[in-house]
Image 1 (tube, rainbow, N blue to C red):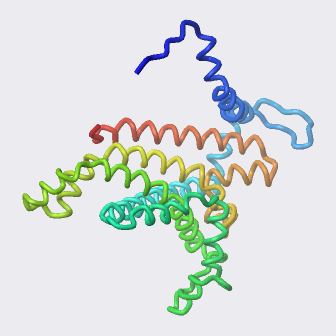
Image 2: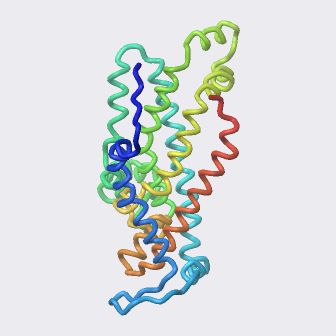
Image 3: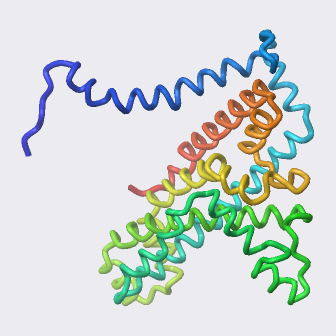
Length: 292
């Protein structure tokens, strides 16, 4: 293959310019503006703003509602990531064993990923609606008092189910690709040697699949912290009693609904820093066990 060599820097820059401009306009500039606003206190009616330093951050960590949303976010995010990874891997292993109709199963299992998060939230809210929901009706038939509109635990479970269901298809396709890249001869040899299915999974499949698993762990944590806003907004709006008020939704509610833009900016900065630290920890400690 013939390599292309650029003798100057203008031509490569022309190729990179569209992506750089998009990143600048939709990531770097908003992020920089949010950091700047987090150190100020502004008048909602346009009366100016004053520099307050770290006062917005200090106020947040003394706010019981914010601390509650902090705990809710961790519970919601790790439950969503674990469930979506588990079922994504389970479905991938099941489809990988199918020889006839594998393309059909793959296509059907990928469809939920094409659904917008807000639509997924509305869909599951209808299913679990205490008045007209089919699933809620079944639960009431068996004597289970399910009502996500009144019970905090039910609402949190509902949002976790909706967010996990939306992400399972994403994990499924990566796990399936990883499983199909593992040589079948290795697994067959282990089976002939008498290795049980669990031993083959633990000693062969998971080590060879570890790069894919590590990538999906990072992506699922980012998804659970940021991209589940649409699910929560459509299903519960953070209620009841702020039981499903995650950090990303609270930042939206305080900034857009309550016009406290500076507190919202401070919350977005804290959330971004927290996810960055969590990602660094994953790369620092979990990547050691990855076999490339």
